[in-house]
Image (tube, rainbow, N blue to C red; front, top):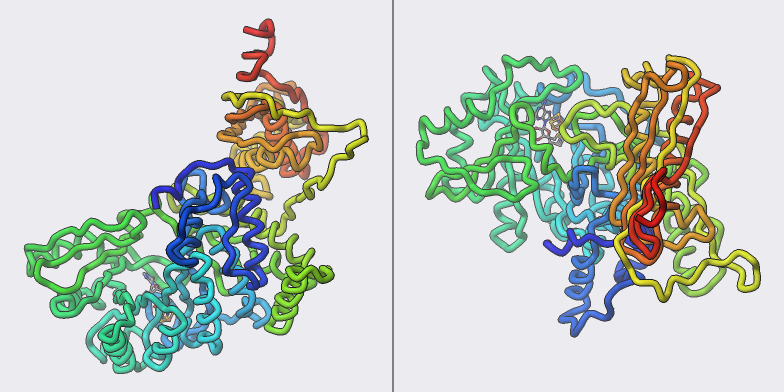
Length: 596
Ligand code: SAM
Ligand code: SF4
């Protein structure tokens, strides 16, 4: 996995991955890996086509779209398949269930497959299906088969979180489809208590599912089984030790989950049984309890009792957050992307996806037509307009996903500002396909120049005409959201797209972009300003002044866009380069003699 972190130019990275995503969007070309424009050359003597594909994938840098500002690489996607459930666990659902969404608002199976394809093309290697209760989705098996087909493109794990009621009936075809892991929820080993905690019968069915997993594993199914147990004080905390005992003979991981507050589940701190309390309790009976070193992205802390077959895990969302290594993204059943379980902010991927179908749900028939169009295109037949729409919505999807991921907070907390960006279209300007041979505009050849380290810094400011905007920005009360945060991301993304916007600009391998925004209360006759400074670095043959100017001006335009409702007269002023380093002309600083 080490080579996944190789740093590569962001510009090429995003373009090549986008191409790959387009082909897999319609599911027609899973087999072919994408070789990047500046790929070092053919890979020597492949063992098999599959292993060669795997190596090429490993050699690619991890997607910029799925990497956040804290360098967390999101390669794990959880998809909710339904809001329905056949149980009513007291900590999760009210007795009467939850209000159901109109069917057209929910993702169709083709839409789930299309979204999954895009995420896998960007480096997601693990998908977990959850819910509600995913096994009650009528088309769960065909859906899992289509997701299983993503394995040649990089999907390594296809997992399910289930209450186990219906699992035993569907387990075998699921394994055939590619199921690799089951997290099964079971909060008690007592059938009566089960009925109290889930408000339904079904204990025997759940045990049957557990037995079936073990049985299939004896025949080599290789399903990783974990049992999830939410611990509530005074309800099932007396079952912790019996659950630990389950790990004596059985190769299973029992995971104790701290009870979490969700809308309407009547959470109180007193009902939560903490990780430390659980450890203390388990140690009273099993003093040899040992910590197991886990994987860096594990959300659970794993322990083991020496001599026992299984392991014990703890999901400690309430007392010890694991945000620092969080690699997950979530898609809700109505197609919203959630970058954090505890964040309110959601952005609709469904709406972007459906743009290619006039805003209507994409069903099997439409999806088959899209795939046929893509096959036609590959065979050199006429390209149908639907493909253009598809490509455009795919671009927008990636941009939207990238923006949402970049907005992920360091630690879980509300990220409400993102919701305001839900329906904001990203302005995408197609790359110029040609520059006239004879026309007066032409790009200067840089073939003979030597690559050097270059830095450019540009500044500008947005000056306000009343004190309102600055006050609202400081309080994060601007209706469209967090002005400084959104403008920063916009500036960074714009720097990377400079050659797409400025006709004669060469694509450059940018190695660094930083956009700093500061609020100055005194500027503009005391009405205040937002001062913007963008710094761009590269190892290249041309300078990065244009990239720095593009970043600063786009950040300023974003501030303008987000504040125009409260200050119509604001001005963007003073856009200029203030510093540049590298190249033949050396260092230049604004106000200082050139050529220092
Ligand atoms: N129905 C499936 C199941 O129960 O496994 C999948 C969906 S369920 C919402 C996913 C997981 O969330 C389950 O393991 C469940 O125990 C856990 N969960 C639900 N509400 C919770 C809460 N308030 N605190 C902690 N975990 C919770
Ligand atoms: Fe249903 Fe799972 Fe929630 Fe229980 S935890 S009510 S099984 S969705």
